Image (cartoon, rainbow, N blue to C red; front, side, top):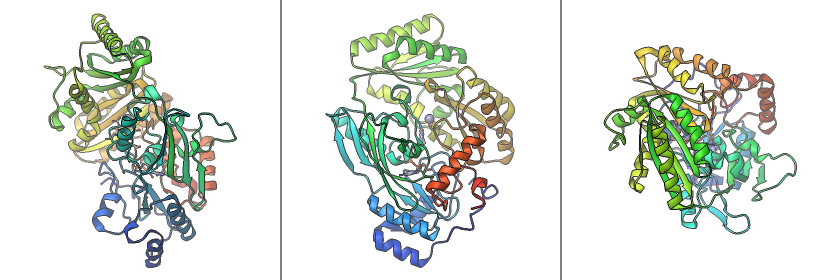
Length: 485
Ligand code: FAD
Ligand code: MLT
Ligand code: ZN
């Protein structure tokens, strides 16, 4: 595990769990909702990457908003720190305790409450513990889709998605959750339930507080219900897997795709040759779609529209033109659904391939498109042969996933990466978290992307909504801002 003990200290104002606390929680939740089993706790204490690990002795599983409210009210009165946890697929150490915080998981709150196809077409209202993939399947049967999709869909919860403002593979087309979430219900640290579960497209009555909870990573409240606008499912989806020999061609291809495929473009993802080699090495059954050799860059383009013949011809013509103009070295269009999912598997399998390869330092950056790959090349020079630099990401959104893959976590490697990567990003006016959030990993780094005044306002909001600081402590904002508490 990665050691964080040197960077944060347990807040001495927090209480530790007592037998009386356990008895109280059992009166609210029953035996089933109070988990002390060692195996279950081990899983809940450990993050998806196996990098961050807490030592919580208690996992609570409420079944409804009222129970969440009672738990938080009690924890606040006892000054017991808590970590809201969803599917535990977060990549910044935000979803697991740092010390002995109580873990609250709303996974039993997984009901779909309503789906309105008529008044405002496609409004889904559900509890926060619904697994994203289950919502995708539900909507598929209704002829709609979720406006977000990500590789972790089989485990992540919509409450976790909203709390991280997850981006993913469809953001290019459907925008961020700040646009598609119409409302939500959240429980504050003192147990107050905020009903902001609107389903309206337009509502300018005062401050739109729901946005505070979108992307605040469980630091301001526990999201218990979500209302989300879902687009209709369109019948024609086409996927192309292309190779480019240089980064400039990838950039130009994106501009061309926006111009020529504009309305139907639904994803524009990229990976470099080290990323492709990693997937081929570590994921079973994956084959290079453009053999025999490995190209420098690969692009996955997806179009989604309603005219099968037209859309396919459009993409084919785009491909042909891109090859003729020299932007694309090679390319293939998926001929059936199996081939389409095998292309997606290469891109979506990257986080898993990295995990299998050993230790990984993950950086999730927004950068100006023209500078993005310079960082990858500079990082390779900076690191030398000690580790592999693997780059992929949502090129269409200006989002680079820069991963440094090493046999084991090693402070000498880390010293070569940080603060270099943050300084570089800040100098180029990028963001040190495009979509994964700050969590524990980057709480103290927020100043690389936000001004001191902005961070101060954030800290004031946190103090207002959670005066005891019990909600996901040590995450999102620098702990130093709260040490006088
Ligand atoms: P968790 O990991 O459990 O928690 C994440 C954060 O949200 C924590 O700070 C936690 O405290 C808080 N939280 C969780 N539930 C609640 C709640 N109900 N109320 C308040 N706070 C809560 N992310 C992207 O943005 N785009 C991607 O493309 C993407 N792809 C991924 C692919 C893989 C294979 C993996 C493993 C992860 C990926 N992620 C991606 C990161 C992660 O899946 C997302 O951040 C996801 O939204 C987290 O959801 P979760 O339910 O697992 O939340
Ligand atoms: C992705 O786009 O694959 C995810 O954000 C996960 C990752 O960055 O590894
Ligand atoms: Zn991503």
